[in-house]
Length: 68
Image 1 (cartoon, helix red, strand yellow):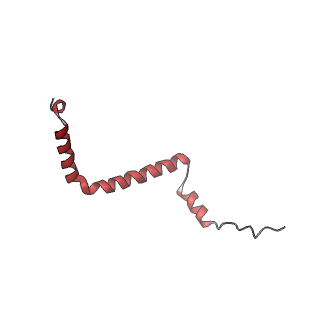
Image 2 (cartoon, one colour):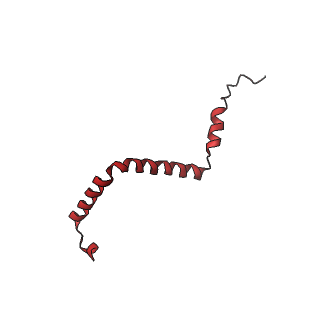
Image 3 (tube, rainbow, N blue to C red):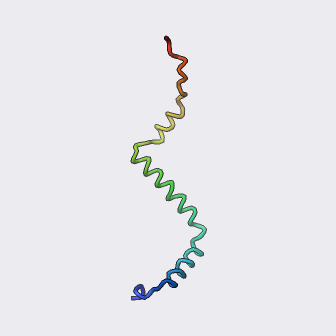
């Protein structure tokens, strides 16, 4: 029943208290959420860390080793 009578000021007070209590954790949580989204998108595309490492280890071909 109390939830039905909360107005704008009560919500702002609760948000301010939550920010004071958990403010130092917010950047870490946002960073973890962002890296999770990036990993999820990589999974959707089918990329893997081993594929990326193999591409980095292979030297780019310069075209000089071709015989005419």
